[in-house]
Each structure stands twice: as C-alpha cells, then as structure tokens.
Length: 218
Ligand code: TMP
Image (cartoon, helix red, strand yellow):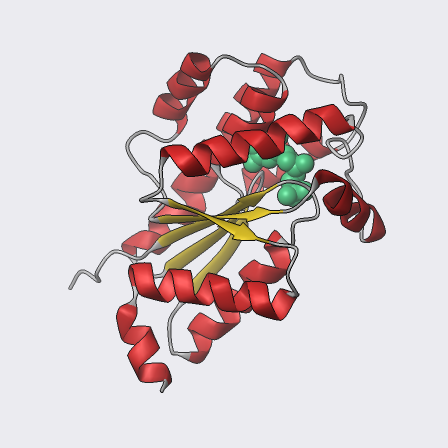
C-alpha cells in the first residue's frame, strides 16, 4: 500500500527570526493531532549535509567565494533531499525544514550578488522539480534579529558576522520572494510574541494544507 505523499513546509527568514522555535511548536501541534513529523534543517538534515554545514557556518566571512558557497549549500541540499526529505514525504510524513532554497536566493543571491540564473541552474541540478508546499517567511527588523541571534549563539556565527547592509539585502530579498510567489509563501510578522507567531503559523498551515485539522481541534 502506498501512503499519500506528505507535506513539505519550509521556514525562512533572517538571523534570529525565531524559525527554530516556531518549527518546534508547529511539530508539537501536528504530533498532538496524531500526525507524523520530520523536523529538519538546512544546511544539514542528513549525515553528509551536516558535515558540509560545518564548512559553511564556521570560519571567516570570506572563507568561500560566493559561487563556491552556493555550490556547497546546493550539495548539502541534494544530500538532505535524497536521504531525509524525499523518503519522509514518500511515507506520508510532514517535513518541516528550518531553511531551504529560498535561503540560497536571499543570502547568496540578494546578499552576495550571485545572479539569479546561476542559482536557478543550481536549483535545477540539486532539487529538480520539487517545491515546498508552503513557505513561512518570518520577518523581523535586522537589528532586532541580530541581537536575538547573538544572545543565543550556539557556535557557528559566520553569517552573523557579515555587516548590517548584507542582512538588509537578505531581508529585502525575502520580501521580493514572498511577493513573487504568494501561492507558496506567506510573510509573517515575527516581532509579535512567540505564542502569537505560533498561532499565525498554525492558521496558515491548517488553512492551506490541512483544513481537517482545524475541525478536529474543536
Ligand atoms: P541557521 O543559522 O538558520 O542554522 O543557518 C545557518 C546559516 O546559513 C544562516 O546564517 C543562513 C545561511 N544559509 C545560506 O546562506 N544559504 C542557504 O542556502 C542556507 C540554507 C543557509
């Protein structure tokens, strides 16, 4: 018997936007309703991709040229998809990923200036036709996000060390992405309390992907 294919939800946003917290809260709420969830992240989410992550999040900001960096993120993404994401979707599980390809568009594209057609070519090679069913972009002023990120740094602050202008370009990039694909992307105000943000996230996910969960919640 083949299970219905699962749903692929990605969380995006700048530094310190609260993606990991929101992902955890959504996973718990789905699991409480009996859903099976894979909570994962990029760069990382599979053994090989976690090894590539180490190369990306440590060291000086100019450690890689921008195209090499995009290639490393894409290589990690392909391993993550093949080893973790696709098998879980095939089993009918929810896959919640803390970042995915929109981060490459925002950071390597808008942030570092890699041309969009190069990034599209990398997407075609690493990912192919798959797209997230829903992308939640948590939006926060840059200064606030960097402050939050510094407070709870857990090692690997290579991107945080880039200047504020870089992070402003990243934020603007996420806005452009959200406007270009409204059927896939939702921009969520992340300045609200974690509980309020979690409620917006839940409304979005349930309404767009699983209306039956709103009914059963009662
Ligand atoms: P994290 O702090 O959300 O775990 O992500 C690690 C860093 O990697 C973060 O600063 C954003 C960056 N990144 C990119 O630059 N491009 C990408 O494609 C991904 C997935 C992450």
